[in-house]
Image (cartoon, rainbow, N blue to C red; front, side):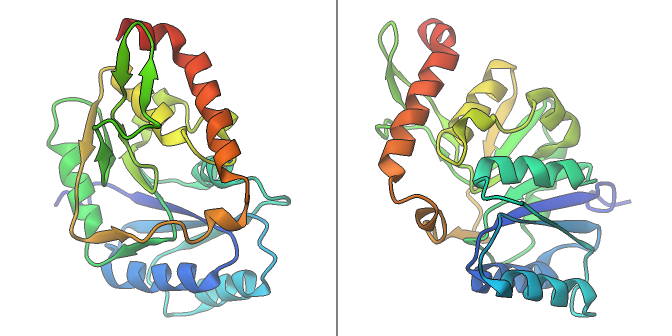
Length: 238
């Protein structure tokens, strides 16, 4: 049995309006995802009716080659909490958290499974890592520290790894610093952080999040404070 068939994969994707993005991703999933994948769509209380009607079309249509689970938040919860809700209804041995502004151009699932199954350690997989001093990942804690992390638009791991990590920390809701938090947590537990740098996906970025909160900078500042408070001892000891 090949490496793909050995692992059921859940792709978890939140949506907030912008049905054009989600529809495009579903077309790509149909083309490139292997048959043992399920898709979990989390509607973050979209106001556009296209989101619900479009999802219903995909669930009923023979166009969809993969099972699609759909859940709808009763209020807007943001990216972090929506990912956690999607995980709870997923059933895959491997989970991929996927933003709907990430364009898929090939079978990236194969790359994920290769990274997970060829390592001698538990791993957290992303597409891109930020390992240089980028401002938001620099901290003064017993000297200057730079925290490498996997960007949250694409994160994957085995289910037992995600259970041990405890999911996305919802103190960072609706978004920002949740990816740095989960990366640091994994690193401190001894996991390998693997960046695929895949040519099969492209993050176009910033397509939906700015419609949620025009005060993005204030959200980022608040979550930075929370990150420092949570990890102050570890930041000093690193």
